[in-house]
Amino acid sequence: MTVISIRRLGDPVLREPAKPVIDFDGELRTLVGDLRATLQDSQGAGLAAPQLGVGLRVFVWNPKLFEGDLDHLVNPVVDFPDEETQDGMEGCLSIPGVYLDTRRRMNVVAKGYTMKGDPVQVVGDGFLARCIQHETDHLDGVLFIDRLTPEQQERWLSTLREASWFDETVIAKIKRSPHQ
Image (cartoon, rainbow, N blue to C red; front, side, top):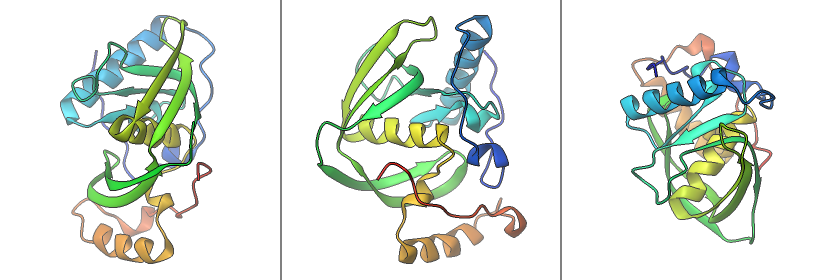
């Protein structure tokens, strides 16, 4: 397991839809290990393969924050059992230091596979639901900032410009999430 540099806002890989995993092999297990190591090093809640520059539909979450033994999903498909929503602060390892109030669904059912190819289902609410939605958005080339209202987007751009790592030439165009 290797800690890998996390790609930041402006890197094109963050805006590309990831491809489904076809081979459940040693390379996939290495990727999941690298995602785990990088997430642990960064002390985040979740991390998707595109954030490491890998365009595959894989993400991990921090098992210390959630109950259960599973900490990753491959080729996830997300469904919402109801219309209930939640508002809460959200950040992203690819946009360090920026935390914004973001609306998400309260409950989620995510179906996918383990890195060994075994089918799994994760039912989550609250923070786990938020994390699964956030990481699945990454796999679709969507960032949490895309969920902001136009007014929030203007305030966000002001905050972002103050970040020490920000470079005006690489700002990504804000788009709307397909997961309304």
